[in-house]
Length: 103
Image 1 (cartoon, one colour):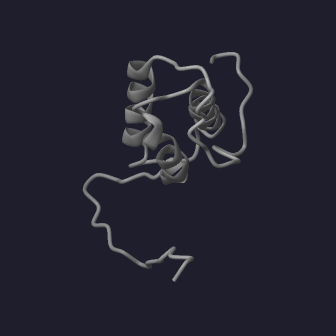
Image 2 (cartoon, rainbow, N blue to C red; image 1 turned 90 degrees about the vertical axis):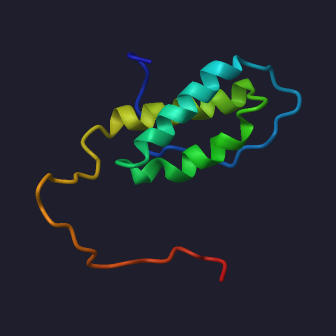
Image 3 (spheres, rainbow, N blue to C red; image 1 turned 135 degrees about the horizontal axis):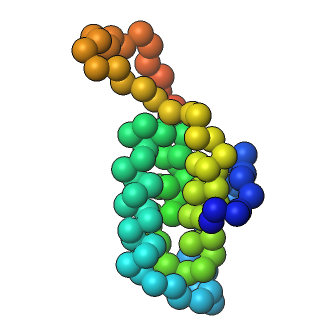
């Protein structure tokens, strides 16, 4: 992954079950998804992508792992983007948004 190209978007399509795809190591996939979930506390821009990949932890295929690698490439290209919570400073909510596009 060190020499991989960076991407500008974490995901650009919806995932499917990929019934005919080749199975991969479930432990590696679960560990990567878990690490990405940990990062979502500071990188909310990857939340949608990680949640799209998470349901396939029980039977991951190569296509699912390539999507996870795309998220990692996106993170590599956007190292300067994050949320910063300063210590000792009172944080107050200035605005709120509801992203319910259905209702």
